[in-house]
Amino acid sequence: MVLTRAQAAAQAAALATIPDSEPVTAIVELPGESRASAMLSGNSDQLAYLAQQFMAQTHALATQQALLHHRQQVQNDALSAALMAMQASTDANVKQLTDQQRLIAERFAEAITATHTEIQEKFRHLQIKEDSKTAQIEQFVDKKLAEALHEVQQKSHESQLMILSQNDGARLNLERLSQDVKDR
Image (cartoon, rainbow, N blue to C red; front, top):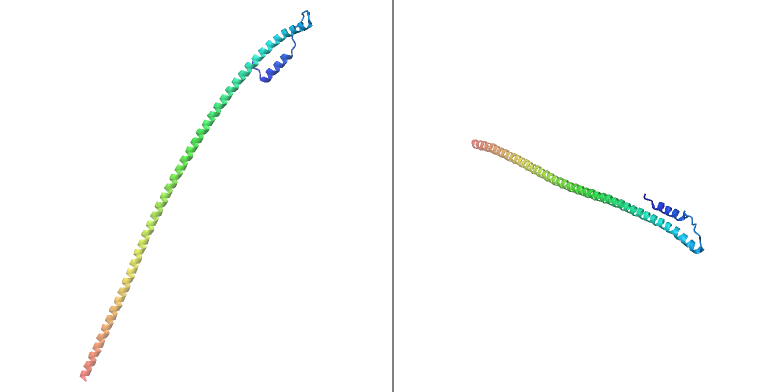
């Protein structure tokens, strides 16, 4: 049976106060000697009992120490396993965060590339529209210039025709006048 420290201490104190159960019935010649021999015989039994109790307590303490050492080792192993699990979890979380950051960076780069491509395409489209508008403006200006030139040429031609007509009329009038002058 294993006793706790408190139980072992209480038992040792109780045994130390127990009087010897064997009565001393010897005839004492010298009071000092008989008392010493009675004490020695009672003390040796008591010492043997105390030694036995000491050995039992020592054994109990050694067993308790071994049990405590075993419990501590189990706790240490459990803590070590928990720390290793936490380390593995932390490593997994760090890897997951790194993967997420890489994925975000890749998506961001793809988005930037797509935006850049889209902007270039819009710019090219605007350039084409601008070129088309410029060509339309040039065509419009050329058309208006051609129309104006044609109108100017037509007016000039009409003016020339009028001038010719007037010249012809004036010549006819001059010829008539000349004829009239000759006829007269």
